[in-house]
Image (tube, rainbow, N blue to C red; front, side, top):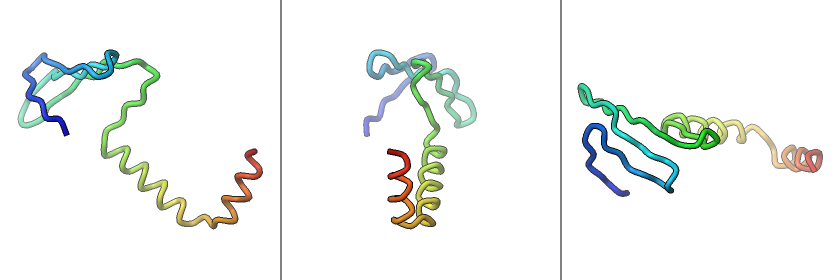
Length: 75
């Protein structure tokens, strides 16, 4: 993990087309602004983890045979 120190208004650049900037610091909360292409998906970490967990739970109720049958239909 890379740890950087940034002040208000300062930012970091990722892949030349994504900039993350500190836009506000107040009461122990940091607000970040992200400038990225519209087609790039940006999710909060807790939302991504919730979606992954939901997918794992949903997959537990499906048999291997059902998945095999579905894959045949999708081809």
